[in-house]
Image (cartoon, rainbow, N blue to C red; front, side, top):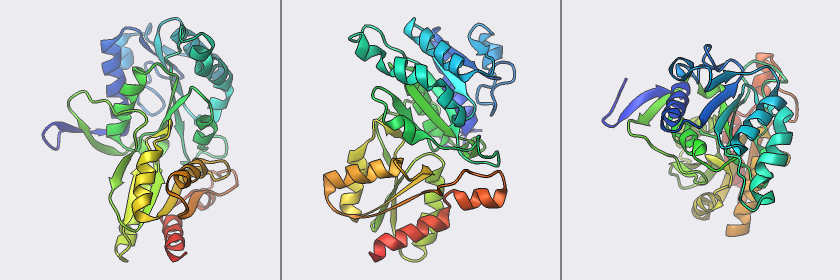
Amino acid sequence: MSSEAGAIKLFFREAIARAVREEMAADARVIVLGQDVGAFGGAYKEFHGLYDQFGASRVRDTPVAEAAMVGLGVGAAAAGYRPIVSITYMDFLMLGLDPLVNYAAKARFKTGGQVTAPVVVKTTAGAKGQGVAHSQCLEAWLMGVAGLVVVAPSNAADAYGLMKSALRHDGPVVFVDHKRLFPTAGEVPLAQTFTPIGQAVIRRPGEHVTIATHGYMVRVAGEAADRLAKAGVSCEIVDLRTLAPLDVATVAGSVARTRALVTLEEGQLACGVGAEVAFRVQEQVGAVRIARVGALPAPVSSNPVLEAAAIPDAARVMDAVRRVLDA
């Protein structure tokens, strides 16, 4: 359903499927591996239609064995394929960290560039009623791995554009999506478009405070900014989009204007995305007022009341903005 010239409105999951479909059609080396990615179309239907179009040889269901899945994908990448490995829950990506961190991320360094591992590991983060082992946001764990690229789209257009860029990258790339984004929809260009890796974007211009965030939390930041605007507070929202390599320049440029920074993430604050962003921004622009917002230091319960208490919402972001502006 198109809504304006040159664009079409797609669900987040449809945008991913479109990107993968286009890249599979353009390059026979692109293959899909994962649990229920075949005839079922993926846990969130983000691979819908690919099995029918490309067949079982290129869209392959795997056992529930994340270490083997990632290892197979990394090995196939080193052998010349361009696999996308789907890990349904980010919580279980840690089972595949050995081949991802100790081989894929280091392959080109260990071989003087003779061997690369252009694998995309797509994994789904975030809380949505599924309990302690299916709700975590572990992006910060991955940001410290040299040689590993980490991207996290917040909307359908970037889900499409970042997936296309990831599938053409020398890799490895971890593509982090969020459960709550799959049912959302947005405008996606009709023309094939590539979102640049390593480039943040200002989603909302503002004057008084910068909110730096990524993924689903961009929507939470937007809700907070809407409510604060009614009180005369103007928030600038920076969507990081890529967490490694981190585009510090865009965030620092915003903070240089506003002189106040709030970082927002669904993961833990300790050694988190916000801690890295805040320190590196201060290195560039000097001392500024900073507040960090993240999940509480507790497992995320499947109880809806406790889940809501654990993860950031607009009210907590508004409180953080007020704190930095009152400092």
